[in-house]
Image (cartoon, rainbow, N blue to C red):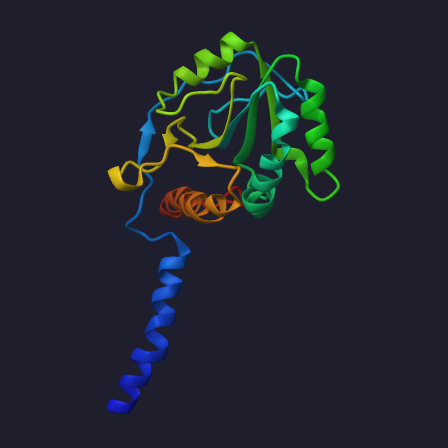
Length: 213
């Protein structure tokens, strides 16, 4: 009997603990709201002509800046670490807010991704410099946009237009740096799982589970 207990502690328990913590999701975890009820997009044009809204969508939001092609590696990182893994969810969209005049550069990004990715949920939206700055200011974030009106960070916004993240002093996080693949694979992936878990749990509770999530 003692031998079985020792074997359980040495081999089985560590595996169970690893699976628990590696999942990044449990029934007692929620992702805090950093900024509640952010504004929806204006009547802005998108690359594919669709009207893009934050309402009733889980949105991964980025700000390209005017030098979008210089930062194309960031979009490849996000595409590989997050987008391709969750692209099948109908209620999920990836949106990049770009300055007017960068349409051709944004199309080059989409063209570069399309040979190995279903790009239907990549959305590039265009607004004036003033509109982009005003929208970003409304997110009430600590980080500021750079001189090109861009950032390497992306942000998670839920279906109710709440910007979500981590509020602990030791682990505060309002966005996820696409320049660092490890941050996408770890912190962002863990937080993203929590968001999806929240909605799946709500759907299950309401007996309304669908393929959307």
